[in-house]
Length: 248
Ligand code: ATP
Ligand code: MG
Image 1 (spheres, helix red, strand yellow):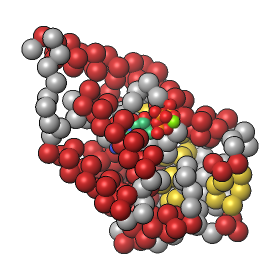
Image 2 (cartoon, helix red, strand yellow; image 1 turned 180 degrees about the vertical axis):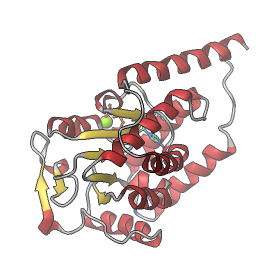
Image 3 (cartoon, rainbow, N blue to C red; image 1 turned 60 degrees about the horizontal axis):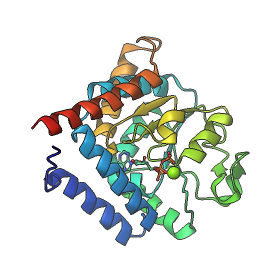
């Protein structure tokens, strides 16, 4: 028999509050709240902790980011509401560009997101000035706009909590894609080169630390990473957790 917990842990309630605040401050849209709900459900299934598979993915992502020529961090409303400090630290550690890139774009929302990033120390933020807008092919009009100084010329792009169509379009456009996605079965999780199946609120701090460590060790170290295998390990971990619940 399945015995679900009746209440999410205090920490996930705290994270939810950050999202709601982000919604009230105009960073997050209604669809973002729904996406968060899907994320919470998968976080519940993975046991609300960073798994061994996720730690491996974080190390692989760090290697890729440290070796990138032109790394870019793509920021949407949820990501900015959840971990603005870590976004700015990561950009500093790996020398990445920060680009505000939204599924549901509006100038007002972009400004609100940029404001929060600036409050947390970001200096340069791309994706705001339309004079630098370019289009990635094979994606419908509203969602294909990117910054020519950022994603357009980037080689490794971190796109957390991203939609599958967009991730696939980035892949077809020749980018290496790293994502955070709590759902190991989503199209984004399946299409990315490195999928970190973890909550961004836990994983981003670990990714910053891993990039610092990878930078110190120097480039070219570390074993091969197999994203398919890593994703199936995450699915297995969910199965195991469900098994434990049903045995209880
Ligand atoms: P896809 O389009 O990739 O098939 P989807 O349509 O289910 O996925 P989207 O709304 O497009 O979902 O993308 C949001 C993804 O982000 C979801 O898979 C969701 O589980 C995940 N997610 C939501 N909140 C978090 C979070 N805090 N940390 C990590 N992942 C999250
Ligand atoms: Mg989607």
